[in-house]
Amino acid sequence: MVTALALEHLARQQTATNFGSLRLWGSIGFAISTFGIGAFFVDAQAIWWVLPLYASGNLVLALIAYTFPDADIHGQASWREGLVLLRQKRQLAWVLLGLLLIWFFSTGVSLLGLAILIYAVYWRPRKG
Image (cartoon, rainbow, N blue to C red; front, side, top):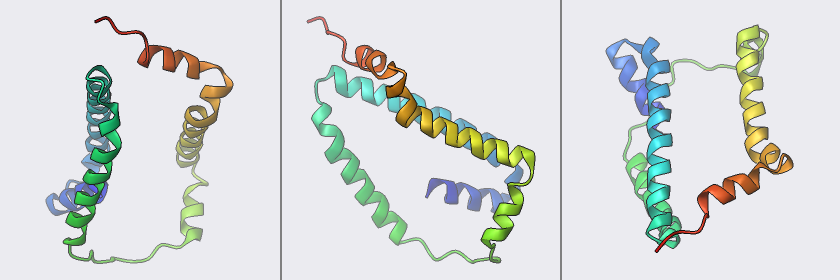
């Protein structure tokens, strides 16, 4: 939803070429805030609040999204056109990199034994 809003905003300002930097800084901000909020919940020993807060936040976002007007569709793209894009080496490289990252963080972490390291960092004994 945020990506769609960002694209709509950039299209109105006719600066759609700035989407890459907007997406980059949004991802960096998300990563930093997620780490900070996660650390807060773990240190405050209130980790059990995460799921109810997440569910409530998603409900609020769904209600907000329901109020948005339908977007105008400026044309349709077929699967064939999408596959033609993958013939470009740069586009294919990005797709393969994304798939590799998904594999690494879902399967590769546990296969390589890095899950133990991640658990050790987050659930180390606390003083006090």
